[in-house]
Image 1 (cartoon, rainbow, N blue to C red):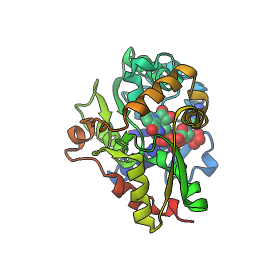
Image 2 (image 1 turned 90 degrees about the vertical axis):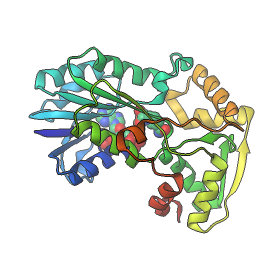
Image 3 (image 1 turned 180 degrees about the vertical axis):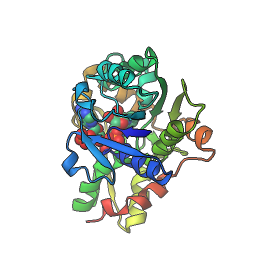
Length: 281
Ligand SMILES: NC(=O)c1ccc[n+]([C@@H]2O[C@H](COP(=O)([O-])OP(=O)(O)OC[C@H]3O[C@@H](n4cnc5c(N)ncnc54)[C@H](OP(=O)(O)O)[C@@H]3O)[C@@H](O)[C@H]2O)c1
């Protein structure tokens, strides 16, 4: 039986495909643009916003790694049930648990997909990661071009997680029994300020990087640009509160990675080594 990976061209999905293949699984992937997906498996064209596009991709599929897309969530779940899928592991977000985000899309998009799965007859496991280490790739162009980064609340503490660790948890939940109905909160293993993350990038690439700290209205505008359609006013207010309160207060670590993998998550320094090429001109 086949395991279908959606969002397979993304940071996490691509790592899920790699690790499933390493484990000897029969893997199929989907993308809206299969011709440019660059994946070493059969890639079918499908769009989660249009669930009926998954009819062919779900043929003979037992398990699915699901990228969160609220638009077609219920339709996808209905189709998966009808196609005989048994298990779905969802890439959700810690934001799903943050009621203070209210109706901010970053929260509701994950809640909608979780709810569609929770009331289905499928076995489900929710992965709720915090901030991805890949978010720091946003700084790469500026580091390459100017040796400088301008960021909101540089001294905010983070607990960034390596995409390979999220994928490793997903692969366990797909391949092993005993994860059905579980919700795993996933973070990296250490609290680091963004300023320290930038220092670590500089150490690995051998370049001094200047940090320009943004506060107040400038920080708000930067977050609005970064989160685009996800950032309504309510969301920006709560993000700014979180950023401000994370200055001088170490980030909390979740236990999901250790619990499922029996080892701590990869450090940010390890992540930078894995992505060194992205920060070098
Ligand atoms: N960044 C964070 O800090 C963070 C924290 C918690 C949770 N998350 C969750 O993780 C997601 C990002 O994951 P990632 O970094 O692995 O992805 P990514 O690198 O941002 O890539 C996006 C993926 O989503 C797929 N996709 C987008 N719209 C789609 C649609 N309508 N139908 C099918 N596939 C679609 C794309 O597939 P194609 O373009 O190939 O079709 C691509 O594979 C966020 O959206 C959020 O839900 C992120």
